[in-house]
Image (cartoon, rainbow, N blue to C red; front, side, top):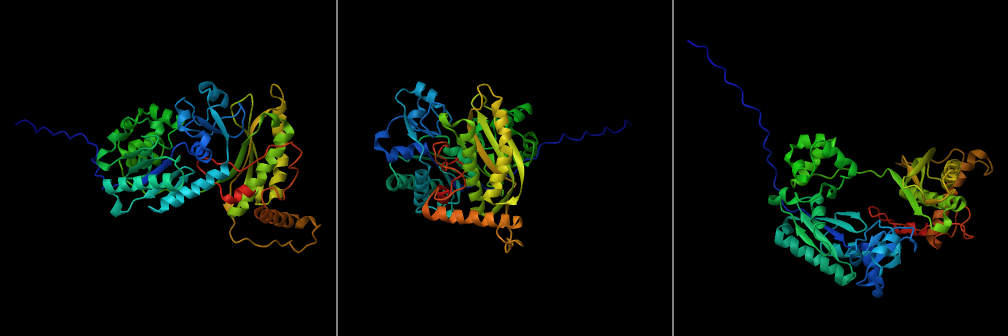
Amino acid sequence: MPPATRRADPLPQPAVLTLPPRPLRWLFLDLNSYFASVEQQLDPALRGKPVIVAPVDSDTTVAIAASVQAKRYGVTTGTPVWEARRRCPDLLIAPARHERYVEFHDAIVAEIWRHIPVTKICSIDEVACRLLDNENDRDSAVALARRVKAGILANVGACLTSSVGIAPNRLLAKLASDMQKPDGLIVLEGHELPHRLYDMPLRHISGIGAKMERRLARDGINDIRQLCARRPRDAGTAWGGVNGDRLWYLLHGVDLPEKPTQNRTIGHSHVLSPSKRALEPSRLTARRLALKCASRLRRKGYVARLLILHGKFEDDKSNWRTSIKLPATQDSFAVLGALDAIFPRLAAVGRTRPGGFRLRMIGVTLAEIAAVDGEQGSLFGALDPDDPLARGTRTLSLSRAMDRINEKFGRHAVSVGPLSGGRVDRVGTKIAFGRIPDMDEFHE
């Protein structure tokens, strides 16, 4: 009798994942060409015309915003002004007015609150709202979005159009808002996912830049379809961490809890005007930026342990940087002392450049920050004011006193060091799209 033939085990099959229900949960609103639209709202002569917003009226700087009309000529954020003029001879340039952009932002958020609670302010021109169970069917969500868009136009400004995305999670709602601009309204429902995203480039997903795109390509992932075809764990391996696993579920419409974030740095930078790119104006500008950082540090209740000085020279696109350790401090005088200690490093490098010291951008960042936990009075606070041990207590108290004076009487009512004489650029508060300054910053 022939021996029994052993039956081969079946090949393992990938697990079939059962996804939870994916109702519409998020409404994401993105203001179109926000800074330029605010300028058009403020100045009727700019309406309907190609406009860019720039830090200074100089061909050596770049556009920080472009109107819808300017974008038709290929002018976008980051386009050099000289190139924008070449592409669009009729281009108009509006100087940035960041305080007004914050004012309009506050008015827009207040208008959105009239229709739906604002869950998260993502940037100066982006807002995310979570939909409730009685407003998350397609028709109700679309009607709500139209009311919000119309309310902004009617009650804040007729130039302030927006694109809205509605989807099961915030990432997808953001992607949906990018699908139709300007003045769009796109809905992504659970049953359409992820195949509705397949024509979208990987770079449109937040967190995927050039470096991550190359990493994914080395693992055989060149588009969203190939990423979603992997199992979640394999997607995470290609990504290089748990975020790939998380991204897989988000692209399939699962609404995951938000990951906690932590503010780790406070910084300011400034593009110097062509006449202020020599050594001394650069140093004075760095001091002003350091004072602004220290003031924000105190207002937020933080101390910093590291100061970073960084800049870009006219003949080099790379970012030069150096740093110095700080005692855990929020004292303007301690910060300025550290800046004075490391600025000679920048000066030495700048003198070796072709054409001498010509700095295009300078920035100061306070890092390794932590909250002040139960601040304790200084043991040396009762000493004679001239005693060296009392200096730290006196200078911190003086820094806080300057904060109060500037808040009451306006920016530069009192400061440390020279601010006049035409040797330094005016350093105002600027808006990074991902961070909205407090109105207090406009007094610093």
